[in-house]
Structures are given as C-alpha cells and as structure tokens.
Image (cartoon, rainbow, N blue to C red; front, side):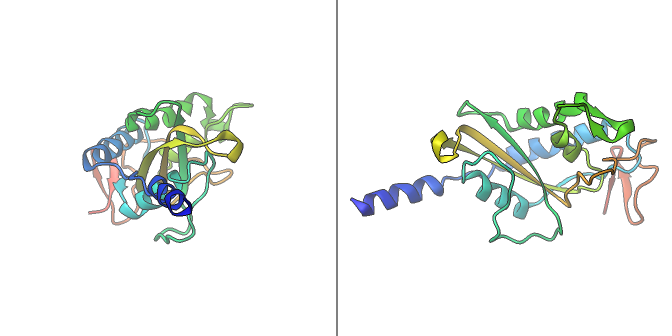
Length: 195
C-alpha cells in the first residue's frame, strides 16, 4: 500500500504545467500589447524565457497560493518578479489571467508611485515594469486541501526577469514610445527591443 501511495503522489506532483507553444505566444503577445498601451518612453519588448517558465511550473505544481521560487533552479536574473493567479475552475484562459493582473491598474496612482489605500496593484506594475524583459508562465490544476495550505482549482504563475516592483520606483517613464530606449535597443511596435 505504501508503494501505491508514493506512485500516486509522484504522478500528482509531476503533472505537466508548461504551456503549449501556442499559449506561450498568446501570453507573450498579450503582455506586449498591454505594455505597448501604457504610453511609455522606455518600455522593453518582452520575450519568452523557458527557464522562467520552468521555475513557474515547479512553483505552480506545489499548489500553494503564495509567492516564492524553487531554490533548485537558477536564472540569469538577480531578482525574479512573480505574479500568481488562481481560479476555482479547472480550465482557465491564460490570457485572462494576464488581463486580471493588468486590471489592477485602476488601483495604481502613477503620480504617487503607490496603490490606492487597501488595494492591490503589484501584479499590474510587474506586468508593465519597463525593465522586465523576459517572462515565463505555467499553470496547473490543483486538488488540494485548504487545511494543508493547498488550493483547489487552477493556479497560474508568471515569473519576470529581471523583476520589478522596487519600492519608490515608477514602473516606466511616460513619454513618446521608444524615445528613451537604452543604448543598443531599437524601436519595434512602440517597444524597445534588443536585436
């Protein structure tokens, strides 16, 4: 009986959570569409990073609705930002999850570099953090028990490199698109990209 329990647990933990190439493209395109619409002079075009997606997958597989990163995977970024979305449904459109992050914009006061009182807006600011150039997301269906600190439903995790949300810093500069791209970057579709 112990062997059977071990096998079942391993199958649950090893569930595939990496997004298909088509969904990766949709998630990436939606990030860039949202970033493009901010009226930023220094916004970088996002690219997909499979290592960030792998760390997101490992974290999502834990089915814990809190921020964190597996320590077993190293990235090329000193700091990795993270957004988490949970739905009680077992099927979620990943683009809808990204949109939910962005919808926190209504609670962000750009001129004061802060969220409205008693509001959450850090998911929005991470999506539009100008220097965050790479993203990797994953999602998994969870059937956890609340008393064990687990969630039931779908958990989606997106990791961003380099991470944003530095206290007191604005997520991007307002201005004409690409007018303040870093040296070595060019303008493509109103976003700064490195050829």
